[in-house]
Image (cartoon, rainbow, N blue to C red; front, side, top):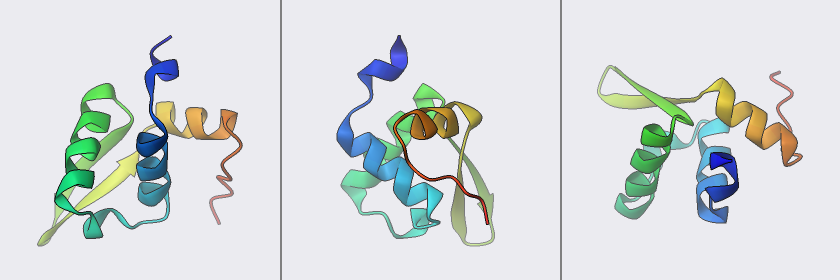
Length: 73
């Protein structure tokens, strides 16, 4: 299962995206974020001057399985 190959650092970055902190990533975190986009966990869309990152349903499911709160409100 591909989800088993996700690292703790990637989980941390998914949590950052969940919290809306994607615009403040360092260069090293952006590299990991790019990997998460390739793996299908994050999508990016340019809005204005900064990129907006969103978790995919695949990422939401993974975080829910790991007990990360996704209350959505």
